[in-house]
Image 1 (cartoon, rainbow, N blue to C red):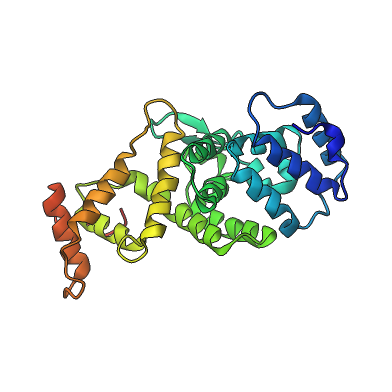
Image 2 (image 1 turned 60 degrees about the vertical axis):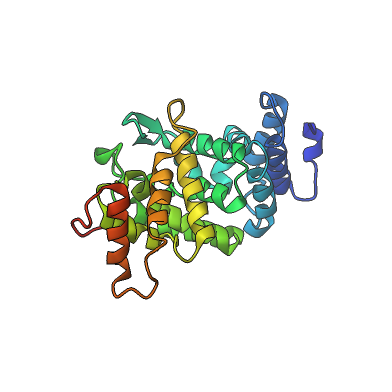
Amino acid sequence: MPRPRDLVQTEPGLAVLRMAALLAEDDGALDEELLDAMAEHAARGALRGTPGPAMWPELRRGLMARGPSRMLAALRLSGALGAVLPEVAALFGVPQLGADQRSVDIGLHTLNALAEAARGEAPLAVRFALLVMNVGKSDSPPEHLPVHYRHVERGGPRIEAICARFGVPAACRELALLALAECERVHRVSEVRAGPVAAMLARLGAFDQPDRFAALLQVCACDYRAHGEGFGPVYPKAALLHAALRACRDVAVDAEDPELARAQAIATALGSQRWSAAGHA
């Protein structure tokens, strides 16, 4: 592992990010001397004038390393995360209800989700979506915590701003926005509501954008398994949606009402209601 003297580069801000990205490729405890050197550079404002597009290659490198959560942890411990990704830094200490209805720290949960993505060798777009999809929850009204009403409305512009700031690839941006809108809905989807399941499959691109559908389910699965023991390796909602998708294979593409026909097929396959009250799954 490079020592602190390697931080001396043309652009100190990029040096801090590079060290954090390199830490993501390493194992073991984070190097205290290196963290101190990174913190010194951050305290001097080294990151303040660093252009976002110049930062992106280092962030990408860290996200695609075997320990992306180590990069974020190093940036946070050195005081640099607030300068690079203030939207993500603000999530630490904010509670939300976990899959088992216990309160979890959203920032720590994000680290766990990224670790799950690395274990599954997830592509960049999945890892980026997990990094940013909760940024609308940082300033939810305290009286509502650990529930986050209207976080999707707050999160969308923030994700757009992050992507614009760093010049993030369009595929990463699109999946992050999809995850923001749909991940919690996927977690809640129920086999007893065949109509909304059919509508969800259409929204997620299951019928015409299979790669997008698969990537979104990978995001959801990592988010699910990030809750710890008892949540994996099989993600039950992915199994449900794949079963529903298989049930729709014989529905004619030119059916008079394709969504209704798909709902009927899903209801038959899953033993659920043909249709249910209007609304999203």
